Length: 346
Ligand SMILES: NC(=O)c1ccc[n+]([C@@H]2O[C@H](COP(=O)([O-])OP(=O)(O)OC[C@H]3O[C@@H](n4cnc5c(N)ncnc54)[C@H](OP(=O)(O)O)[C@@H]3O)[C@@H](O)[C@H]2O)c1
Image 1 (cartoon, rainbow, N blue to C red):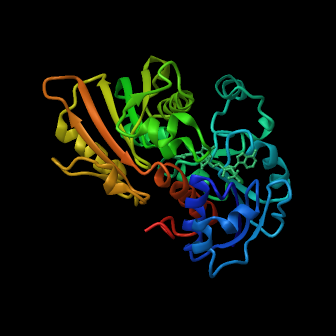
Image 2: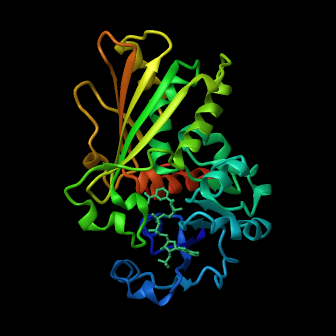
């Protein structure tokens, strides 16, 4: 199958190209960059494309995707929504790693992203690309909105507590990411001198991933067998910047509605994720670490009930560039096109 990657020089774009290059069903047909010559000069690409130099490289404006069945957008928000309609009308599927199609309400998108939505009529078409949540809806989908890196960790961290019956009263997500989460474009707050030997919170008055987490929590809770009102859950989220390149770690504190013992909780998580190829519940005493998921599409979870307390602590580690972005996008692609879900990812 022929695919295109828009934004191939970015952090997630390059991870996509690497993963697609070794995927047995894929030919890289088109790569885009704002300066096409920069691709072949880029040392990462000169190594990777040495034996596969047949991909067409152009700007996004000039790209000819007509031979592609699928185009990935690994571009900043605001770009995919400009091109999605045309591709959709030509029958070319789109998987967008940006936030353009994540929020179902264009007004909420406009409020948090500060720009007008250019394709609100496509929002109903978009499937939120979290395979563990939306596996059936992804099959054959024309437009997939990949989740943000923080929401992936938070939603997978709490999903078993919401699906059958909502057990959550308060959800406090204390999340940390390596600097690659901010992308490759030069930004003084993520350069080495500002990040090394330092640790800080940011966006404490509101991060764009908060409405996404709230939307998906509401979606799960409102369709759970025992109807609940998701508005009753108090959800808060603080992101932090880690002095490292890749890796994301979330400590999620949950106040439960009713007391549940540790054994029951562990069983709930194990049962929910038993058939998930990329979600691993770690055994007692083995805590998640970012290095154990580095360059992997696995997400590691640990569920801990504080003794004598109604609070739980769920620890989650993922690679923001893989399960938080490019790997999860390949997982979604496999489902969309009917390839085995783990193809190219194990
Ligand atoms: N980084 C993460 O951990 C992560 C995780 C999940 C989702 N995401 C999302 O994935 C998307 C890409 O993130 P990233 O971290 O890979 O960003 P990045 O490293 O900054 O790369 C973005 C790429 O988009 C290209 N680009 C920028 N403006 C463009 C425009 N107007 N038209 C066409 N191409 C344009 C740039 O191309 P040139 O290099 O050619 O200039 C750049 O290579 C973002 O929407 C981000 O929010 C990122």
